[in-house]
Every structure is written in C-alpha cells, then in structure tokens.
Image 1 (tube, rainbow, N blue to C red):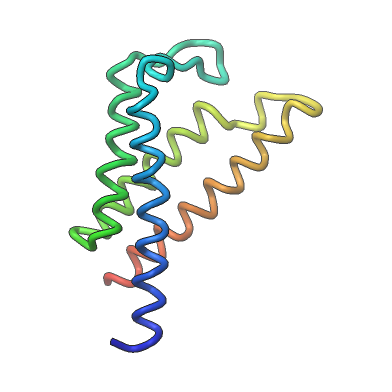
Image 2: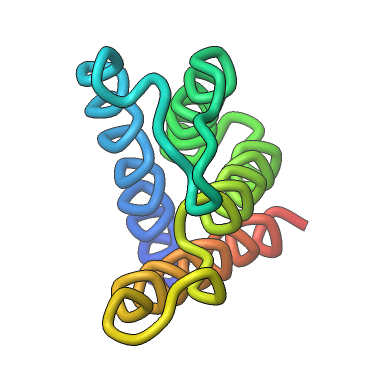
Length: 123
C-alpha cells in the first residue's frame, strides 16, 4: 500500500466514523429527536427522521469498511442535502440567527465534497 493510499484509507475511515457516531447518537436519543421541527415550522414524520438516521449509519459504515463505499458516500450526500435544506437553510433566517446556519451549511458542503472524493477515488 502506498502512502497516498494509506492517507485516503484513513480519511475515508474518519469521514465514515463521523456519520456512524452521529447516527448512533441520534438513535440513542430517538425519543427526543424523532419529530424535529424544520426551519419552516413543520415537523418531520418520525419514520422520515428514522430513515435519515439510518442513512447516516448505513452510509457511514459503508464508507468506513469500503463496502460499496461510493454508494454509501452518495447516500450521505443525499442525507446532507436533506438536512441542510430542512434544518440549516440560512436564507430562512435574518441577523444573528443566520450565523450558525451559514456555518452548518459550509460544514455540510465540505462533508459532501469529501463524499464526492470518496466516489471519485473509486472510479
């Protein structure tokens, strides 16, 4: 294994573990997180929220273990798009309330970019 391949492997594991840990934490707090209110004032149905948490867990495990990693990374990108649109849309807020959502938008874009790198290295 080359040093470059080793670094890619470590990065993929770190990225995947980020989502695995987030998915586990969300499922452990499912009772309080099962019907979150979106930025638009309506609640997501509990099964939709569970599907999002499962996407984090399954996509993260796929990326960590390299089993269908491009598909796992694509699943994570879909999760990130949904989470950003529903919970971190800075266009819905004004003033200081907008600041944390700009930050989360940028974080989610960076994570999606790394997921694209995982897909790209598999091609």
